[in-house]
Structures are given as structure tokens and as C-alpha cells.
Image (tube, rainbow, N blue to C red; front, side, top):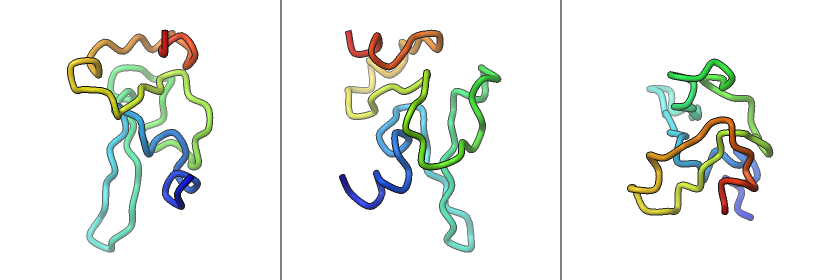
Length: 78
């Protein structure tokens, strides 16, 4: 596991997460699920090791659009 993965957790590889770097070079992780689902924090506390909305961001772009927020991580892999 890399330093980034240790410090950020699941967000570093989640399709719904976007890294934001401000003008002072401070990094934040935005959860785009927070726009439509209040269960998700806009800027979640890190590291995030468990998340109902996690979706592997290493998959192709077409598979990123079929998120089901009520699904657990183990069920997303099936």
C-alpha cells in the first residue's frame, strides 16, 4: 500500500472521489455522491476504510455510472 492509499484510504481509488488541491497546495477529497445522497459527507474524514458508496475507480468509465448507494462494498464486486 502506498503512502497516498494509507493516508486517504478508499477515496484514493474510488470512482466517486475527486482530489481537490487549493491555492495553498492543500489537498482535499470531494465525494461526488454527497451531491445527491445526504448520507455521504462532501469532504469525508480521512482515512476512509469503509464506505457504502465505494466504487472501484480503476474500472472503465462506462461501469462508473451504475452506482447503487444502498449496496455494500462486497455486493458491488458481484
